[in-house]
Image (cartoon, rainbow, N blue to C red; front, side, top):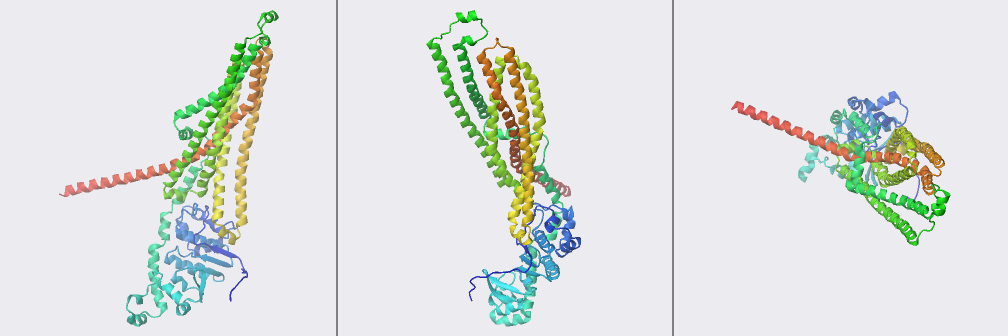
Length: 612
């Protein structure tokens, strides 16, 4: 009968153990509980039947030891038993065990099969997938499948007698060679009589497979002794990478970014182009004021009425043309310098981002396997996604805006000081207040940005682990809990991001107040020095002071944001240098070993000479 459609009903809860164990970057206890409350009696029973008690005793923090990303500090057998312990602890009705005994040696696998599956789960429905013959004999029923289709169903002895495909499978698994295969056909009956029944044949097969598995599969007890003190060392490495420094960025971070731009002369050329572009813009406004003064000298209030009547109010056509030509040349000069500045700036910033990305990628490709074992995937994703995005888009934008506005501020202050020299007296206390503002806000803003960056890595790690373990989370009914955990991590990251943005806006408010004071001082100087300052120049100075209201606070905001964005370069530079440091340590260790070998050879030669 061909089954066209239908449905399947599961009468109970399901626990699933995958062939590739899904391990969280958490403690061993948290991996077993998976959010459930601790039942001490059940928990100890699960550890005993899964043969984990001896392993836990070797760990420095017991069952509270961090196992690392994907269980980096555990062996393959420990991962399999940890996954099985998680399933047993949750006390489900149906257990789907996908080849969980393959990673164990024969002795450990036999104990786990007997104590955990046959005894502890005796009242449960257990579907065990296995290709090991010594375990098939102990199953109540066997579903023999070939290429996704059920070939036969029954006990081990029944399938051996009636299913030729099952018998061929057992004899073709490498370890299952019977002695009858080694002699001629006419001696088959004699050999089989000497060996006994098929059951005795497979007893011999089990011993052969036991020795093979012992030599190939993971040696749990041996590995446990080796990695006893590893987790503490791993924790220190994680802390060193995500260290929340309270000091400012080191000059090496800025040097690494500017070195990635190219040569030092290229950086100087870029700064010169920024100054030239800003200077040409300011010069056009200054030349317009100077032109206005020459055309209408009567507006200059420093002369008496009699002098105004005697002054020449008509300017020759050649002078007018010269003013117009100079002012007309400033327009293409501004366009040319702006385009040239933009071209060079885009080129050097793209080169810097590409250089940092390629260098970090090469370091990872040549990194040690130990580094990949101890580094969470979320950290690597964070570097190649958010941090590279910062160097691609955010840092160039903030750097361009910061340099452009700083050049305008310097130019405006020079013009204001040239028009009102008395402004320099008020500029000194204003500069002190400005330095005080920056000192108060700078450290806090930088720390907020660093915390925001560091809270993003756990979010990425959690998302990566959830996607990787979705096949386990669904049967355990933990999907909603992991979604809530993701929301919590997202809220935590968004909280620090909101605080960072709020701090930036609060800094902008205080800077606006400082600019208002500057405008107020210039207005007082204009009133107090009326009749001594040319109105065209005074109007230009006041216009620049009013423009500083937005430019000044925006430039300082961009400077603070640029420093906070440079944390991404610091984190990328850490990944660039960490593998180099590990490689140097390995080379140093190799050199020490060579020196020790050489010294032993010298001592041996001396003993030989003494004997002769």
